[in-house]
Image (cartoon, rainbow, N blue to C red; front, top):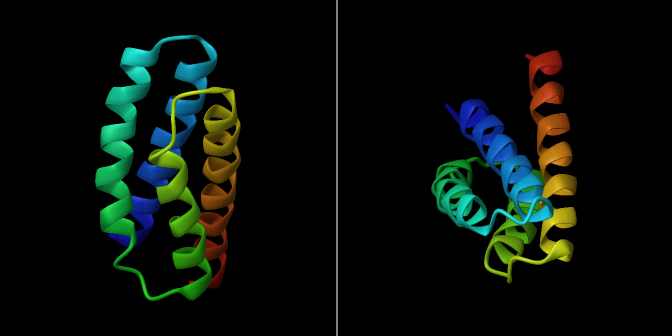
Amino acid sequence: MGKIALQSLSSDLKRIGLSIQRNSLVSAVRFNTEAERWLRESQKTGDQSILKLLEKVENSLQSENDLKKAEDCLMYSTLIQNKTLAFKQTQ
């Protein structure tokens, strides 16, 4: 379940970033709510490197919907996606 939660979080982060860039703030708020839900689920993991990354994601999700948040969300989306790919290779 942890991998699915992380992948879903990554997807929602990407949607937040793209929504903000397209000036669709209603969509960004909706995806932000979903991302917060997946974030809480993802925080149940015991992996310290992921937990540190998730702390930064949480701070970003609480920030104002501006271009910095969009860029951060897109970056965190990619980092989380890479982490989940590493899980698949080691298991």
